[in-house]
Image 1 (cartoon, rainbow, N blue to C red):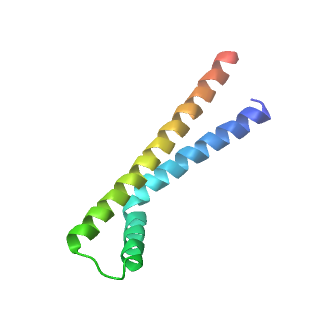
Image 2 (cartoon, one colour):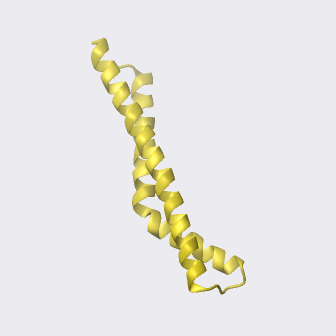
Length: 87
């Protein structure tokens, strides 16, 4: 396997790992983002609004994580299968 292929494979695996991390850490990241929103809006908000914002942030982090995971995994598998076919 050429150096270029190894670097590309490493990059795609890193993208997949970041996507997995984002998806798994979405509740923690969403809580921090929602708390920041509350602080920036004066320090208080209703529970319903806070929970809606928290859910929206968590869904956004999960979506970005899932996309990165899927793209990274797809291209990693594509590189490996292309390398096997060329041998």
